[in-house]
Length: 269
Image (cartoon, rainbow, N blue to C red):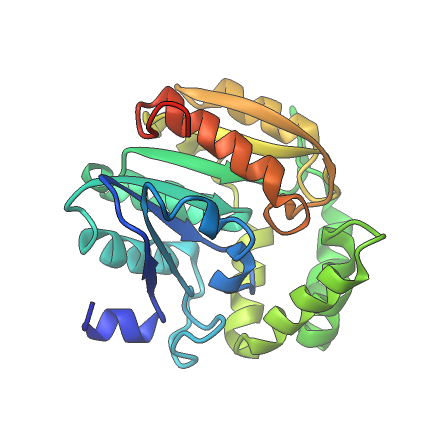
């Protein structure tokens, strides 16, 4: 598609079919983080991916202090894809970007696949998000001192210890992001609390979560399943926060099962 929006967010398209799968990355990454999954779906679906503002090859001058800005960008992309059914496949904080986009423009989306999601990363009364307030304060202080160093350290926590190659790949992705935009995105991620928005998302949702995730523990997925009106939780036998990178075959199989349950996948595929 020859449109300024496509150039601004480096939108890529492949495959064809009656259903579009729109892939949205998480904090500081870019669309290439999905590369191990995308080829599995191009035979039956139109597959679309793009870079969020300030990330990857997207316009480095566009920056959003709040996730709502990224949600508006997602809506703008989705509006140009609404000639067929549309399923969002989103990772980590990208899941909350997708949530906000759907609540603002529900006519655009048919279902969500949330990979390693969390609406709140803090441990609060009645909620185990993974981080104590003092831990989060220390993280944000480290972020302010050295954005690149903070993200490089984070990369090592997000992937299995026996995959240094993937850690390096993730660090390279972080290095492509605009540092100011990256710092803003990180703050919006870790300081956000979107738990009260979850009950308003009435679309079918697949929650994909690793059994051992240092960022979004199992308790988060279980709580989200209770809060979302139409959600199923698929707990993957894997470790880390990025199964689409470290265990793509598990994610592909789970996504195919979900699409099949919605009638969005031909029998036997």
